Image (cartoon, rainbow, N blue to C red; front, side):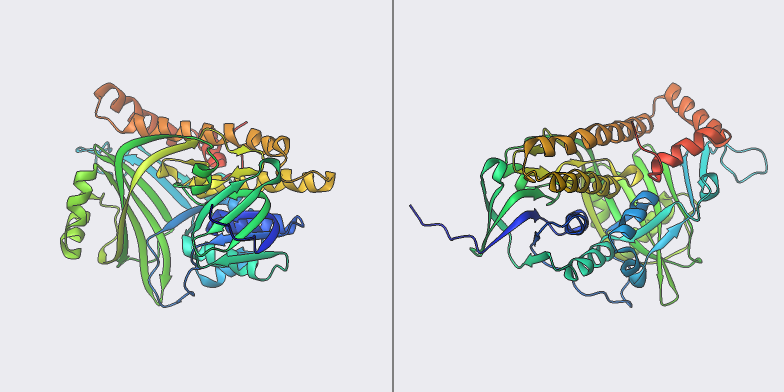
Length: 418
């Protein structure tokens, strides 16, 4: 039998994954007094203020903004770049728009405003790298939190309530009283801890395209539903007087393969013809990428000595941009129960402690996943009675202020599912 390397360091908590959710959790647990190590394969490159915005972005809602402020990361994010949006619109792109004679306003359109909930904005569109860098900057300044990078996780030796040992591909090993998987949708921790997974593909992919446009900086994000899936516009921060946005095109995998093969000029022409006329004039494509749409939900978020957060526990249809916001709510909930456990002198890997976290988050996450599925599937068809019903619904929603406010309170995180 090959001898195994002795653990090079002991910590109370090991977090696998130093992305947005993992780094946030490290801060929250460090603030609670835990000795924490974050294991991340590679630290992101330093911020270049002259670079165009990265294609990977998130819609950070008001609740997440508050959490990021409490973790000390909001100011470092603002010092890089963030972009607020004050309005959000949803409509169906029809062959013959539903408009009154002489009007350019779609009747089947619902528009939400920050004024509907009395806030300065509805949220911010922010590059994932900006969020991650800011959080890791806070981690670097915490004496009881350490970032360990340079290698991938190779093995988990699970020891029940006592946590276990993580061994990296370069042979380094670290022991923790609790092992937390914040390592994304394809989580190794989830797999090695045998927590199980239910995965349901949507049979669509999303093409994400970062573009420079010729209009002024935009303050509205919008989503137009089509026969093949949604088309979305997300405004991004301006850089050196140039204005940017992220476009999202949902479609069948074969169709997106065709689009990815187009030259930039060909793709720009296709975008101009396919997207609604609300699209500002496009100048150039700066970056593009695609990813499959898969709903995932771990069969269990926890077991003695192990817990999952963020995409390692659940992935959701990105339709309303709630993915990372749900992850940050996981962080807040887990930090609360572990902080309480520390005050009571309980081990962080105690199954009852971890079960309390799962009890708080599983149903809330499932409720949001179910809501997004209902919205997605109700628009992803061409059934005429349903098409009429949903367009009438959009028209009525625009004119019913209490319903609009309720939707916004959930979307911004100002209210939560019971």
